[in-house]
Length: 337
Image (cartoon, rainbow, N blue to C red; front, side, top):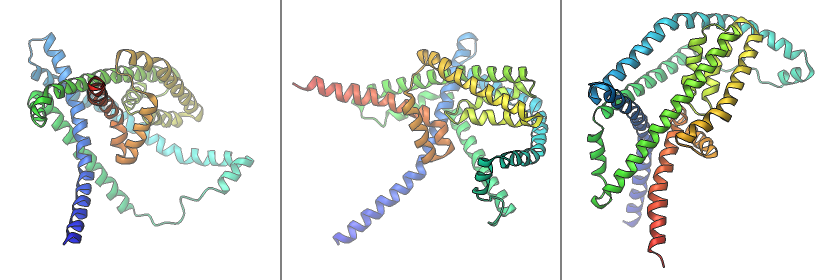
């Protein structure tokens, strides 16, 4: 009987761990929705403070402006971007062949090529399977985006309802402190979002102006992409710069090299000048912990973990400082001899 109970307990724990692993993805989506809700609600309050509109109406105005901005961007720049990317696809095979010939002309290059596995040979490749996998991932991304948008808008329209529900899960004598922690987390995330927005705008402007000065096509669209992807820590600058480098490569390899230099210079200015100035007024995060959070988030949850690693780290630091350091450690020190 004892062995049976032990086995059932182990099975129960394993099932609970599996369910928790599945639930973590849902919790990440909820956290992303909370970030969106903080953004929409604070912007809605800003509009309400300067107009006769209510905060909820301000949230609606913000949503409409965002939709109109995205629609205008895709309608104006989408066809041109697609045309340029088509040129890139045509140019890349010949450029890659020329690059391979140039590398093979050197001793070290020939050694590297001789010892590099042939990725085009062997192995079965199914076009249908590849398309099926791509479509399934695309459907998953769209579904997750719809969930985040829907939940985020609902949270932004009536945050007090969900706040009260969350506080009811806390013992009565701890609710006031829990409310203070929630307020601190909300304020910290809002300040972090403001800092990220300022940094994204600055990087987008510098990249866009630099591309225009270099004569690269679509400088506005590429600058916007660079600014938006700068939201992603560490990987964002590389993702945003890849499109600019590819489009510049369609003109000439020299232009692509200039774009790479531009991106490196902008990222140095961003990392050494802009971010320290922004963090003085926003929320400063330890760089080493930020890198570790991004790595751990990417290993555990993939791209969404990388995307949300920094704000999650901020929440953990605020909660740890207020609950563990201020309440437990300082409380123990006050209660001690």
